[in-house]
Structure formats: C-alpha cells, structure tokens
Image (tube, rainbow, N blue to C red; front, side, top):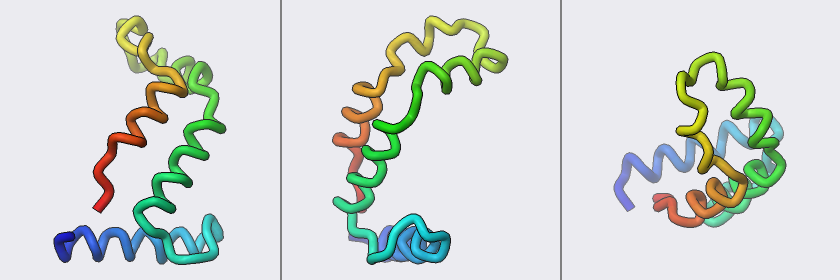
Length: 79
C-alpha cells in the first residue's frame, strides 16, 4: 500500500468516526461492507429521477441498478 493511500484511508476512517457513521477504525473490507450497505439502501430510481434535469439521454443510465453498483463495489480496489 502506498503512503498516500494509507493516509487517505486513515483520514476517511477518522472523519467517519467524528460524524458518527462508524464507531471503530475502518478497514478496506469494512469500507466495502459499509458502501454496499449504503448502495442497497439507495433508491436508484429516485437517484435517476433527480438526475434527469442534468442528463440529456436518460437511456444512458438504463444500466444503473442496485446490482450494477453492488458489483462495482465488489470490483473496486481499495488501498
């Protein structure tokens, strides 16, 4: 792990604890689990609806589903 990534992970963990989002240090797998929990709780249709003002061709977001973002989270390389 590079030093910059380590500092970033530490900073995210510190801020998440300060704001009450977590109560323990955040590991890479802990971050992934928290991210997937937030994705699962997100109403993707509502997000797409809120973006409709900014997106000219909404069909470009047809692949946006909860499963799509959960798979993306699984494939992320977290340092």
